[in-house]
Image (cartoon, rainbow, N blue to C red; front, side, top):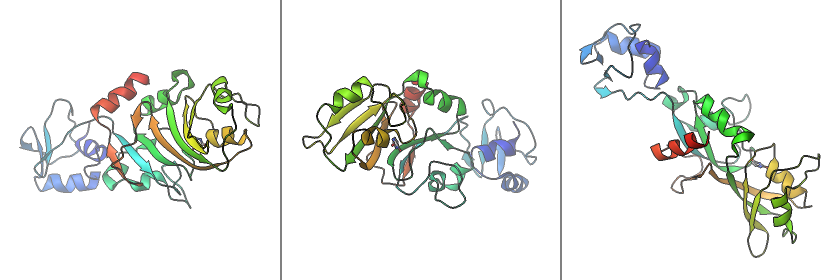
Length: 235
Ligand code: URA
């Protein structure tokens, strides 16, 4: 791979910046200054450093973001704030995208990656990846709804949901729902099917990865190796 392409893909610098740094001797390949950034290297075999810092090559990047309300689950939008705006410039250059969508007013765990194959496979209905949400409702949910959701509730448009787990608080106005699918507005529509309304919704886990409680809304962190392995096992 070309040196400038490698550095820009890793979000270390732009291609233009790479050319400038290389000219001044700031890029070393196996300890030797390389002034021509169009040179090809094997990132798994060569040691590259930029301005004294070792380049760690990772093909894919994975982050978790605590999505705030008001942001759309997209990598671009003409009029609305979008989630990748919350990432620093070097990560935006890595072209991460959200694994699945959350509504604009839904908050909580969002995983972003540039591994399209894994993202696609995690979202495939075949893989039944669990997504867990915390919600509040306008009214107490009626008795028996746990069983109805377990059996697969039918939405207003006739769609029959897959079995979902529902755990309600004693006053039945809030609770957790675990889904293995992700249809448009699914939880809002499931609650609406019970003549009720979701008043707040937060995703608290995805594929067994829980939202890191040290992240405030709008903050992100890299996934750990264990978390990445957990996703790979399910994808
Ligand atoms: N269900 C919804 O209704 N909205 C979301 O954002 C996620 C699940």
